Image 1 (cartoon, rainbow, N blue to C red):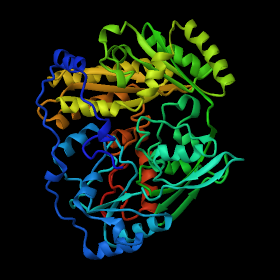
Image 2 (image 1 turned 180 degrees about the vertical axis):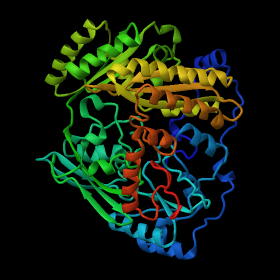
Image 3 (image 1 turned 90 degrees about the vertical axis):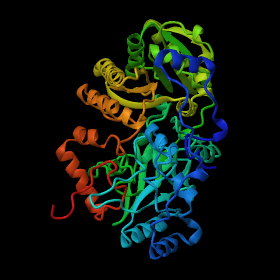
Image 4 (image 1 turned 30 degrees about the horizontal axis):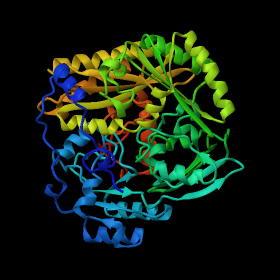
Amino acid sequence: MDMLWSGWGDPAEAAPLPAPVTGLLRDLLGVRPGAAAPVALEELSVPDSPLTAAAHRALAKAVGGEPYVRTDAEARIRHTRGKSTPDLLRIRGGDLTDLPAAVVLPAGHDEVLAVLRACAAHDLALVPFGGGTSVVGGLAPEHGASGPRPFVALDLRRMDRLLALDPVSRTATLQPGLRAPHAEALLAEHGFTLGHFPQSYEWATIGGFAAARSSGQASAGYGRFDEMVLGLTLATPEGTLETGRAPRSAAGPDLRQLVLGSEGAFGVITAVTVRLRPLPRTRLYEGWRFASFEEGTNALRRLAQDGPRPTVLRLSDETETLVGLAQPDAIGASFAEASAGCQAIAGFEGTAEDVAHRRERAAAVLRECGGTPLGEEPGERWAHGRYSAPYLRDALLDVGAFAETLETAAFWSRVPDLYAAVRDALTAALTEAGTPPLVMCHISHVYENGASLYFTVVSAQGKDPVAHWAPAKRAAGEAILAAGGTISHHHGVGTDHRDAYVREAGPLGVEALRAVKRRLDPAGLLNPGVLLPQDPPPGA
């Protein structure tokens, strides 16, 4: 099944906002009904594909026939941009300026190499496409100085197999087009799990996880996806790059790190070897309440640094707790039930003995840090609704509200100032623009040395919502860099964060990465302008 073309996920899962939420939006933020409904797909005016007949033949030969090169309107629309709020606002309004010339569906590594050769021969750019869940402009290539360059969306859905599984080493090799639920089902047949469950879990793919350095909601126990990756195969216009032949190595710099987070700018990931964990026999999630975000943050730090570390560990600030966004499937059920403070979720997975032991020890730490236990009901409700938030965003857009997210991370000592700086920057920028926002935040990924901060912003849309949001996003980026945070913890760079990433990496770092891109992709075919600025024309 394809994702909703003008929103998130399965259309059958979409639901209107509860009445208390629409009342809150009206009374607190001045949101008024009247947002334009998405243009119907069949009503979109889709220009003919600029793909030449010769290019079409070359691509079809590369992937085994005409059925795997699609130039019909619907296929091209469904591969236009990702799922950020600006992306959705543009496509809902009928803006097709980033429409691919064709959608190409290879079946394996050799076919990907053949597609790259065909693109080079016919001057076509190429954008790898997994689940289409990018929220940072990672699927819309930038136009060069000479104008729009036709590009193909390389849809990897046919590359969806479990290639190998080593139960002794507890490793598996997966193709990049495997969607996460399918990957988990295949591994579960052998008694294993990846333990990677980001909010995009139902739609995102293995290749996308690696390309964007994804982090899942159980990262406290299982780690980030980049920590799970033991090896990668990359198809580039200049050939194949194989990385990772042992669990650890001192044989020079780790080339996996060039591929992880590369977002399709250096090549197309065609296989990923990952470490596995045994399927947990017991899962238990519980809620805790803290008097303040500061108090809760200190408790999370204690567990992250000194243990015992839960499998899932997250903390919502006062505003997110009050609104109910900590449990998206139940948001707005009863604001009166929400008491002051911040809600934390602690989840434990493993054997029954391990879960009981870690839960008891963690509870002692949380109590010592001021936490009040709320029992299992809040935790289980969070687990049930953990993938609901993107649907809520669509419902907010439908009633004329603007809703977007951004995230960052920093060392523990910088987290309080970073939290305040980003919250204040967003509030000031949107208030100045005439749409005072509701800014919410949670910590959802913790490490011994620091943590992530994930912000959700809701306001009225303004006359031009995309232009309205841009200054606030820039202000938040400036605040992140000034406060010592990273411009992205797990969403990636894309085009939205690219300029801030250039500043974060520094001139020499960027030039080193551009040198890598020039060697692997000398014609600049791959995802132009994503991750890195495009090279100037030769001789410039």
